[in-house]
Image (cartoon, rainbow, N blue to C red; front, top):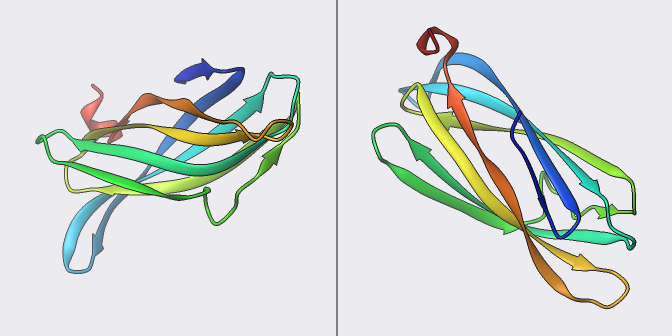
Length: 128
């Protein structure tokens, strides 16, 4: 499980291969992932934005960014955890994702970036 800590914020990732599906007339490999964010700091922080890099094994890269995660901008108290699940479709059966979150410290309004550790998306039949 990839784990990274930036500015007292720990981000860990778990992935699950959901199978090969036909999506809009094209075959795609579907992956889900669960992100766990823990605030090891002394102050509440609010997750404002996400920025993802999605890279397929054929070299194709796309970026996704936007407000919050899964429709939320969670406030994470000190020593608390926020968990969410999402997904990603790939044309190839191997890829990777990484990125960063923008957080705001609630006591002073300061914005800061937190790294999302790189993680591999791989169909189980490819991991032999």
